[in-house]
Image (tube, rainbow, N blue to C red; front, top):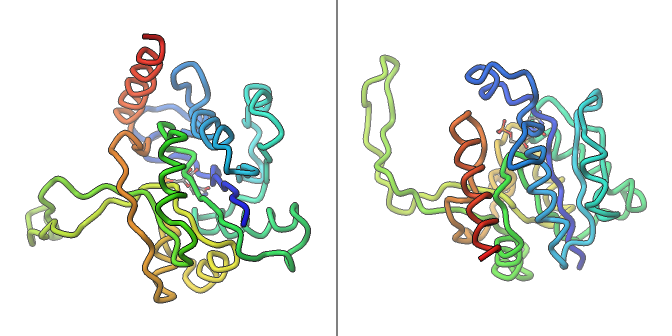
Length: 241
Ligand code: C5P
């Protein structure tokens, strides 16, 4: 079975715009000297097990920095088929990549690792650990971290309605890896989900939670961008030592 990566990058990053006042979609914001999305694409392209890395852009995306990606090599493929939601972008990408790879009839049991463009601190080691832990289990799996804080559910007035016990709770990250046909069927069946694992769960399967670490953060707010910059620069400094 082959491994492919699929990176949905058709979002507009509205929460980041609202707070930073910057109109650039967050996947293209400058981070450690590169467009933000390039960092995750670099890790995925550098993972030997991954055959190709498909990035899903909005059809009218005029900002894709092709020149800054050129040295990532032939593994990187661009699909201009993003949808209105993340789940739609992933489903469109799964169909389009099948077409690129030889027609929808070919959709089968290959593994697809779906990764947010907005998680720039992914490492090759994290990807390899996910692949090793999931193995050949058809339920697939995802990187995740156990919840550390006490959780509160709010009422409409912003007061605490309930304290939610954190035992057994995990924060889902990406990559999330599932078999190509199963994931497409799951997203067609449950198109309202916010991650791939939820879609698989609606089919009654139980994806593996593979422990990761908090450095694989999702850039949503301006402060996340500063944290990601610090993580990437610290790793670079460590490599130089
Ligand atoms: O907005 P959020 O941070 O949850 O988006 C997660 C990922 O999904 C991002 O990489 C974003 O570009 C992508 N996305 C997409 N199509 C959409 C909305 C989000 O590919 N319509």
